[in-house]
Image (cartoon, rainbow, N blue to C red; front, side, top):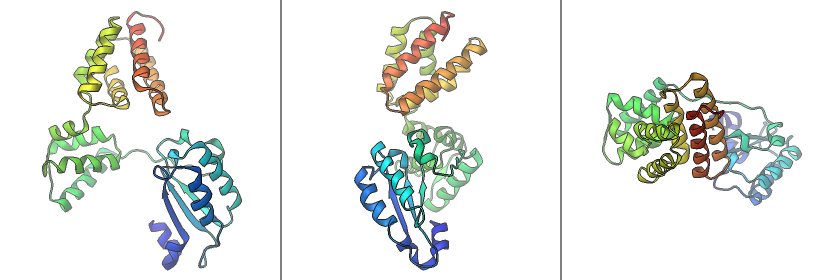
Length: 267
């Protein structure tokens, strides 16, 4: 936004279009809003307009194909900026037409700086131990950290580590350890039932379970090579879940891999 205002000055509103693709994701949006805006000439001295599509990975494949054609036809009069969480969901023809920038997650000190600034403006009191929990639960994602602070502050202005843990509904490491111990001893049924209990009782999503398993793998009493193979397997399962596969089916498949590892068989 700052760049656009600097570039276009007083005419930035006429030369800038921002859409959230997760809300408007159909092909009609690309054919109408985006195309109609891109085909007209820019106002002022800058020879092009700017279209920003936030969360572009939520666009349907048909909409992305239409967007690809629009980008080709109106490259002289418009510049396109796309942001996404998962670049694998953007079709290759669009990726090949873009300069790709990947932004790494923030460090703990950066998350703490943002949290302190918000706490000062919103009259919140954040316990020292809460910063570590906030960073671990947000995993360096600033937007998620802010959302966690907002949710916690709606309960109390005194933000503690315990409150953050309660809000996030994260899986407890002790529960995940029990799940994996059952699997490594060959008891797949008990492992699966315990996993289902954790997901339902704690309201934990499949992707959060995967992240907890990835952390717990390195605490298991197994060979380092097996840990590496199991970590690789969790990454594969996580990718499938992100792409739309059934979470519980994929997690059962992962537990089966732990059963094989416990029996000394190839994962």
